[in-house]
Image 1: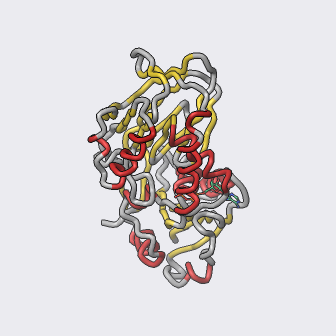
Image 2: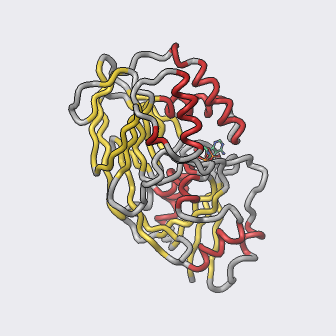
Length: 295
Ligand SMILES: Nc1ncnc2c1ncn2[C@@H]1O[C@H](COP(=O)(O)OP(=O)(O)OP(=O)(O)O)[C@@H](O)[C@H]1O
């Protein structure tokens, strides 16, 4: 018997298409697959549910939601033999898209039934894991606005983007040193990415790979509003490197220091995360998560 546990985030995406046991049962074979569904009731609940499922000896644990839900579930599976399944039900679904797991539910469930496994890299920021990306600067502020708007849709994302853009002058100064270099004042973004997609098919690090043992870093220095608009266009056409204030590189570890302040506002897989220290240690754990993917 293959024990498959589904951890469902009922508010991911528009929350309008709940996953029921009856629906799931029709894609699996009774007597071969034993299915359990657990519903996440609050932020971080999926982590507790997954920890329970690990103790219950699940063979496969499926995150049903977006990048935030995947983060909460996958965090418990690093270094284990339990495979992570994904049913993309979020808004952006960046990691699922990078893994070529379709939003079409039938096709996503077929991937789980077929049990084809691959190992992917996992990022770590001060001991917290990320699977897609983490960042400091504009993206972290944007995510803060996005979460407070409580509209997990593309429209909500665009509106959070407009507010972040409008309020840029109100931001507290940010002075960041990377790997001991001379600090940059108010960089627009420092993005550290494991995956080549941020969600909604957008990418700032199109060459990133989940299996190369490297993190792709994009640093954009302080830029004016006109350049920000230009950057928006470059993101849409995947040509961020055309911006002369941008620098990209690959690394397996990175150290960020913040001067004059003792915390970092970051985003981790699209969720706001305040870290109460002025030092960030970011690294990669090579091929440490087993994921079910299409062949
Ligand atoms: N029942 C719940 N009520 C409120 N929030 C929840 C609940 N269950 C989970 N959450 C939180 O919902 C947040 C969003 O989840 P998730 O990232 O999966 O969806 P999304 O933001 O729509 O998708 P994406 O990140 O792909 O854009 C996560 O921070 C998670 O902790």
